Length: 315
Image (cartoon, rainbow, N blue to C red; front, side, top):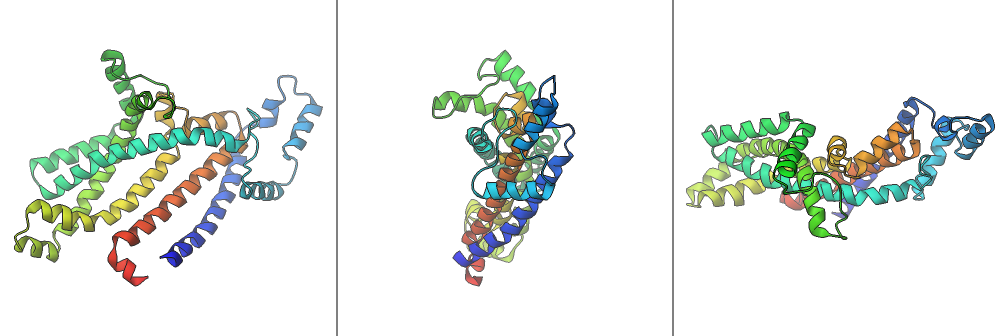
């Protein structure tokens, strides 16, 4: 097991290196010059030159990249050109917000999507199956920003049940924090639930037609014992992989949803950084997002081994 994890980590290292090259290169394509924005309206030539020297922007691009990677390996992602704060501190401030939103969203997705997928597979070609497919297609088709606005109008403005926007740190006031996150988490979780439902249904249908399922039914086991203990246990492997990827996507930050509900997470941070040409923040957020994806894929690989006895035996 440990050797398998070690091999997966070694594979992730060159992947992360390639991503870092793309991140550093693509940010150079952003229009505008951050130094001109920092220099103010007068744009004194001496000030501009001082800023370029301070942030090493006059160095060749390969030198800038090597310096950035070396600092990143030491935990230094640079200084924000806009706020003059360490990028790592800005990310540390936003990361708990994004993690809370991602966890609540994935919980909504599991609670809605997986049971619907199981029911749709068990009741294939019935009214319940058609309804589940319609709901799934609706979740994929409805834009998040539209659903978010409609929820604000209904739940907050008309009914007054939940706050329309804002964020409360969880450890300051847990109840208020959950209340402020319920609507944005549902908006994101609804779209993910549709994807989970379709994959769960497909995986369950392939398992339900297997010979050992017919054998289990022939032994007199109840239908739900067959479905949950035998079918779903074997159908869960592709769902694990999909869930890890979806959670990694949530960690990247849901830009539109965070903007609508005024949530100060990764999405809002990177949007503000792009508009202000804050290269260091853009690089730091994208790099952390890439690391998040790689970690989630590593977790999915480990879960595959833990859930699949045949893979454990092959190691």
